[in-house]
Image (cartoon, rainbow, N blue to C red; front, side):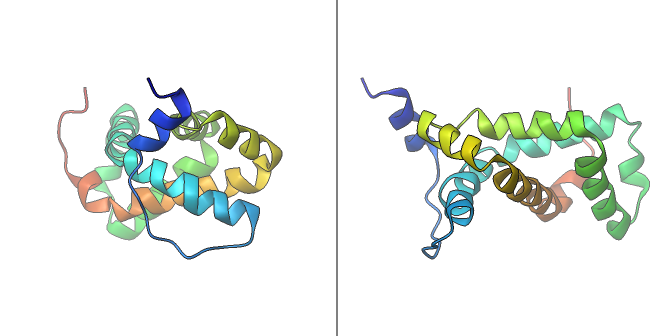
Length: 133
């Protein structure tokens, strides 16, 4: 039976990226991007639940305001941001967690940016009002 790290890595989609020399950038491309892609549907679903819990105000906004709403939700609601980060960090191997811990500030900043990009790139999906429960 494969070990936990092998199983986690086997779940991730392959994403073609150019080689990098920076530790944080390499971690972003080799770890964060594949996990975010793997967890895309859950991230969208969690954000829809967030919208629902806040009285669906998001759906009354124009596209520019919706992008701002996403950005502000991730920057101002620390509890929500930590929840989303937990969804991603929970898919780290032990070695990746050690790398994350060693460069937590830089990698967390990159993860926040990637989460915002992921949500804004799914704006059409987020606009669909459907059951989130």
